Length: 107
Image (tube, rainbow, N blue to C red; front, side, top):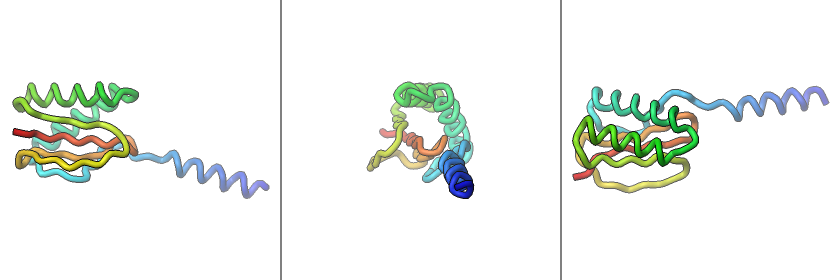
């Protein structure tokens, strides 16, 4: 029985492990823009950890102010996407385990 308890505890610890660093899945942004966008996404997701809509709004509004209008953003879990975007303006990343963030600029 003690072995079962130890296995269950180890399994629970394994399940709760999440990466807490930003993990870029796809990006065609230049390094400077990508770094700034990633930092903004992390800040927004930490600030609005329970409200993906507010995090997406913060990212979109900040990107519009810094880099001109027509930026779009989706923050959430379990979604697919197919978009058309301007060249050198796409970032698709994960943060906090399962939260996906996609930021792009459209014309």
